[in-house]
Image 1: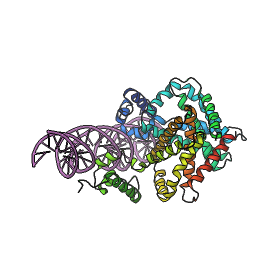
Image 2: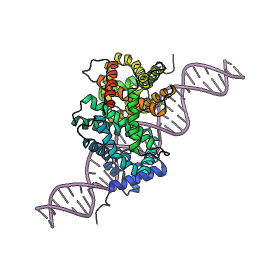
Image 3: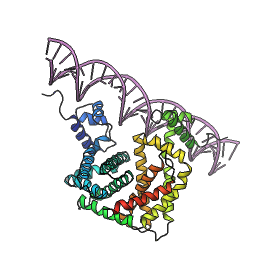
Image 4: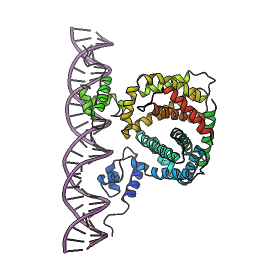
Length: 188
Length: 188
DNA sequence: AGGGTGATGACACCAGGTGCCATCACTTCT
DNA sequence: AGAAGTGATGGCACCTGGTGTCATCACCCT
């Protein structure tokens, strides 16, 4: 027998998500989350930096997928095409978890403090993409702008994908957004 | 004689900025800010939603400038050109306050919680630009993407402008970023 | 057997943020 | 003039997120 129940972290995450769903994010205290997981408040903060972070534990995974996909693109691919390859690498993961992703997104958009956290995760992602582009020999200025363009494409496509009515795949929405961006930037 | 000293809000803002400069953002408590302004903690929170917000009181002004400049662009201007006109309308204001803006930016980039707040202000700005484009008859999908492109241009240009060494005007940096974005999006 | 080690509990504490009521100068109504 | 209303503030209790610190105790290694 283990001294502690295993997977304290995932138990905390599950308890948090359940409680956020049952009572709402802001009417859930960290003490309640810990109690449901059979732990204490102090232990919660050993596993997650703060109350918001428990909703964003997947963001490293997302970043990893994108950067890996980007690095695997043909060396002669244009920078933005390489970024699109990175984004494509995430599409399957999202399409498999559509229900979860949209529910989570609904919680986030309802709470400004969670939106803030999401935005800074996207900023981290932008930085990671920029670095990956630099590895491919893209100059700093272009790398940053390409990364921002790619993240903007992702944001727009994800926003449409995560609305209840939508039926298209994330991949097709991302490529549609990429074409729209081309039109928008050219047409002037 | 007035019952209270006038301009409580600006006194609080000045006290906060001074203290952030003297002791750093995170070693300044709201009680200290209020005390220096001759007020109480409770009153601080009547004027600012939270401790971070006092650094972002200018963001409505920025939003107003951009939206007004955008609306004043020729009706037949391409959407992104109209956004550029809005951004141009802010350049003079920034160039006049370069020292203040860079100092403020240094505080923000040193504290993730302030970055989060800045990012959500930019998101608000994106929404406002999108709405202003819709007023000009731009379709929703294009309007949002154009707004994101415009904000990305602003972010990149402002980032360069706010670095200690830079000497170019914000306007020229923004237009350079716009050209770079065109190249980046085309080249693929 | 005995000494690390690492996750946890327990507890005190700080600071941000809110609800609630009192206060009091100034204004407006009668 | 006097009464009633208004609006910004003070004061205070309170909650909650978050941290520092030390004790605990099962497991591992020698």
